[in-house]
Image (cartoon, rainbow, N blue to C red):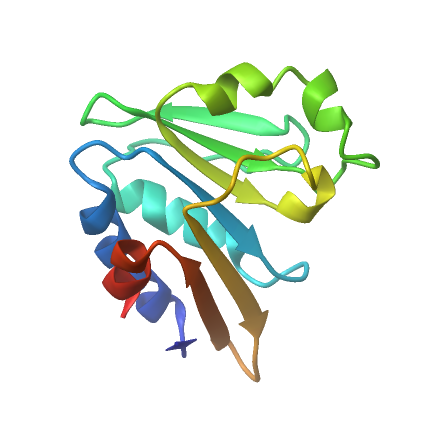
Length: 147
């Protein structure tokens, strides 16, 4: 798919949120270079799921968690600063990933071999201007919801 602007990304986030509710329980990986829009899409998705207030980037904290109005928890991860996939284990994230809830992971390749299988992978590539080309791979119900 192609997002010509942030409004298109927001529409995609809203469709995905509808597919995830009423009880979001999925692992979504976001792939792409720096500046691709991974964090922006996570913010749009969390807003579509009803998160109010500030949505912070977990670039330094590695993880930020949000209580969703439906009662579930959404956890946003950024593994960009990992130098070794074993840092995922050292950070004590096994229990977080074993618990129910929505997990949104930026830079999942930096935790290669540690993460469970994703339900959805989004590959986001900047194009000219503000556009983005996006490829979705994963559970058919989630991929179809994006279209």
